[in-house]
Image (cartoon, rainbow, N blue to C red):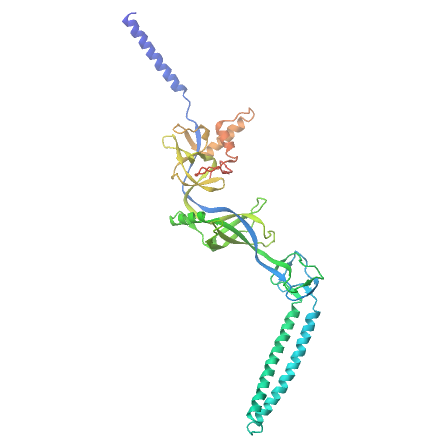
Length: 426
């Protein structure tokens, strides 16, 4: 083969290689589109979901304060009663007899005092003329004083007998809802002990008793010291109550008490809130879920739950840089979510483009084309509708559909808890 032939063949090979490279470049697919959220710092309510129990504001035991036979129950069980309303009647005959006896003793004491007073007055008039001795005068005045004391004692006995007779009508000590009758008619009550007849509970408003771990409360205090959290005053802290059926109670509560001592058995701090109950729909003793607004957390980011992933290293988000390449950012998040958004406290900065749709097509270091999240979601929904008849579903549409399903809850500590997720943007 001549040198000219070899040169011709070599040139042809180079031309063919360049053409092949150019063809591959022309056939290279464009970077995939991903929906991004341009995150900005914001302030959010600092809420905690805790378990609580309802209790009456006041609870009074209605007891028999005098011995006797229970004659009748006047009130209707389970109804509202007023303070001072008669609930039970005890046989008053023995108590009336005691009052009559005390009144007779009072009359006798009154007569004795009258006689002693007359004698003492006579002695005091005759003493200056020395018609009576000083000793007789002293004795007359001493008898008068003794009779006066006996009269006062007899009056007190009558008052006590009247009070005990009044206890024959057992009255409600407070206004509230009267409970079940504990003793039937005809039973002897108050003999040797104060017999419990029923209870009265004041259920409007109600107390909500709950606890918070001392470590969590301490972390809130530390965050407040760093300026990231502003805690509400006790009288301004509000809460919502979730009932057992999942519905939110329509009346907000107010935190009115926070204990200053940690329970050594549980390591928790007791808190209490007041909850209006005008319709008497809530009953004491019920367990409820309490959403407590403890204050405000500032300089945090709200990110859709679908944008946060996790692995063995913790929670992270995929961010599109200025060059269009995908980068991973490890983040710290709160355990609770707000409107299907995670609260990111660390790991992001203002202006980061967080991928919230199309994560299946995003690879760390890969090239992508960022578009606004809402636009990407609309395109995915349209593509899904067009291909619905063929049974196909593009990856972005699959992400959009998956965003409305429960997703595992990412946790910076690597916990396996799960939270509901949604791909809706703030």
